Length: 322
Image (cartoon, rainbow, N blue to C red):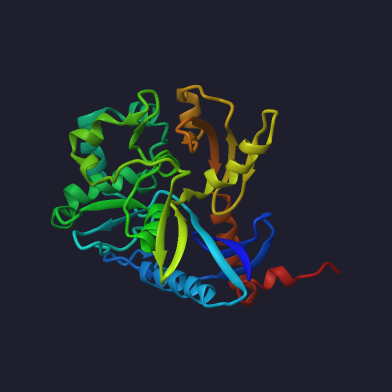
């Protein structure tokens, strides 16, 4: 029986599951595209229940496979997304899509209370982008859906919710807090003052190191389960650990992101206007980054070509030069 380490990598489009041996060789993989659902406003979003079922079924199947002895499990996923749990640990709302608009009256009131958009962007190292600043989702829920907000016990960043599905333990960690959420004051190195003023900190679980793990028993199997990590930060981590000289990392996916872990300066006005931002490393140190919605643009252009030529989505991958 081969000892393996399991990883779920949950992207906006592709959901992946991997097994690695102790030498980090990939020994098993599964890919799936899950159908979307809609929220109460008819806006397309991740089907949280379908994702949960796929992850549980996939992992349970591997545990039953006599070929593998699973020792550890961890998770990476896209950020800017919250799962809101009630006092029984059940999800209260859909997983709101980060491209969903926040009503202008909500954002205007926020800036009126806590400073203009440029000030907030500089303090939180987060260009102001509506729901993409996931902390604003919490503010929106408090004032737009107070009946829902009042039922929230914990709001978990998506990577930590994935871990919670297998451990039942709610936590927060730096890489998820630090991905353009509007929650973190990068200079003060703590939650921004508005988070405390609104009582948002009371529904955010305790912060643990990204390297933390939970020794638990799942399906009568003793497994060490990680707390999850934001996907862009997970791409950066192995290079930080292995490279001696400074480097710049280009990460592609739904977003194309340039990451510079060696620039710890605060963002300038010009940086913010050019869609630069900061992330947090696993140790809470800042990473300077710039981003471009390239993967989404790729998808839109493929859909246009597919419609124009009346072909199935994905046909372009099979086109050969004459």
